[in-house]
Length: 118
Image (cartoon, rainbow, N blue to C red; front, side):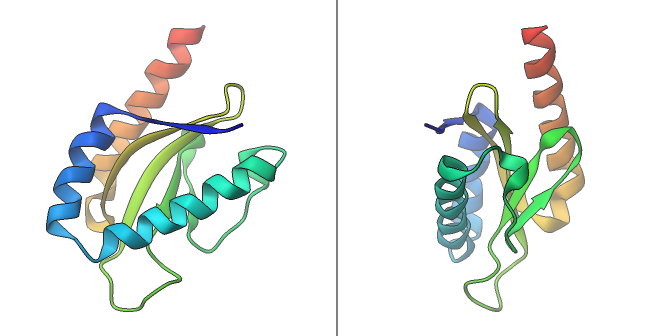
């Protein structure tokens, strides 16, 4: 059974993002719920395909707000699905325009997580 583990980066960015983008957050969370439902029946996270799902290096995925309502600010929830532990690490959430900074944080988190196990 997959479970989620919010990081401190997720906790702080989610509060800020919710206040600044109140229309987008519910749609992102709805797509997160869809992704979790798919994880529970999939062989691994790589077998899941969805219009709201974007894959990046280091195994990081981004879940967007699309597919539900038009006219929302492009935004991403960044996560790291760890197939070995069946934990979906919630890394951060932000506007697509902040993607570079968000991805740097996410890559550092995954780097330390992987190296901590080695």
